[in-house]
Image (cartoon, rainbow, N blue to C red; front, side, top):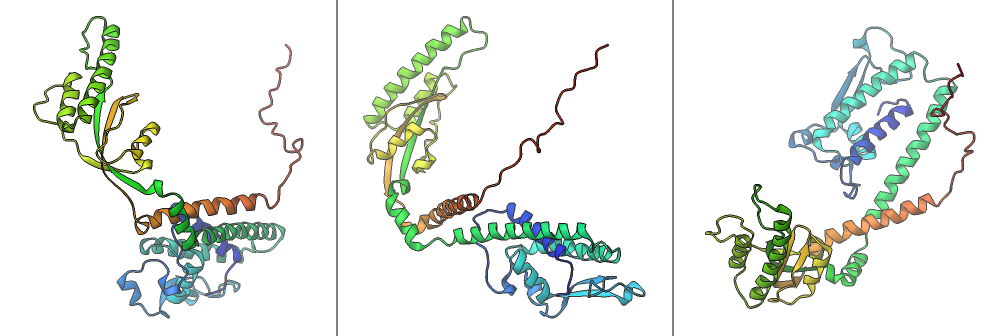
Length: 341
C-alpha cells in the first residue's frame, strides 16, 4: 500500500464504523484470510491479486512527494491484494455492493490528502493536535470493536448452561385463540349511546364466560368464534371464521397475564382473559420443549449482548472525569433585563 497520512486511515476507520452501526451489532466478524473479506462476486475472484483495482491519476505513489509535470506522469495504483488487506483491517464484513463506495471514498481521501500535503497543511501545531485527537479516537474505536469481538466468543458450555437453566423459555405450545369483542357494534344514530355502550360491555363479558364453558365441554372453536361475532353484531356469520392453530412461546403472548397458559396441559382451556380490546380464551394443543440446536443462535445472541454490556460497564468504571461546572456553565440562555426607559 502506498504510504499516506495517518488521517487517511482514521477517516476510513470512521467510514467503516458508520457502516457497522447500520448492521446488526451481534453479527460475527470475519477474521480469516484477506481474500475472504466480505462476500465477493465470481468476477472479482478471477482478477489477479497483483492487478490494479484502483488507479488514481494525478496522485504520486509517495504522497510525501510533490507532483511534478503533467498529471499523466504521476499516478497511484492500488492492487487487489492491497485493497483487500485494507478491507480486512478496517471493514472485513463489507458486502460486494459496498466495496465500490468504499473504494470511491478511499480514492477521494487520497486525492484530498495529497492536495493538503502540497499546501503544507500536514505541519504545525494544529495538525499535530488533530493527529493526537484522531489517534485517541481511533484507539477508542478499536477498544469498542475489541470488546464486541470478545463478547461474541460465547463458550458452548455457557449456551448449554443457559438452555438447561431456562428450559421454560423454550417451551412451545400450540394454541387456538377465541376472541370475544369488548363491546357490541352500536349504530351511530342510536339514542342513549353511553348506556347502550355500558350494557353491551356487560353482555359481551357474559358471552365470553358462556363461550368458555362451552369450549371446556369440547365445542369447536370456529363455531364458538362465529357466535362471538354474532353476539357483537359483527354482520353475517354464515361462513365460519377460520381459527388457526398457532405456535407460541412465552415471549410471543401479547399480554403479560396470558403467560399462565404455558402452564396448562394439552387439551385444557384457559380462563377468560379480560383485556382492554376484548376477551381471549385459549385451548392448548401439542406442547414440547424446543431442542438446543434449534435455539442455539438465539441463546448465543442473548449471551453476546449480556457479555458486551458487562464489558462496557467495566470500561465505564475504569476511570471517571470531573468538570469545573463554573467554568463550563452555559450562559447562552441567560436572560438579560431590558434597560429601564
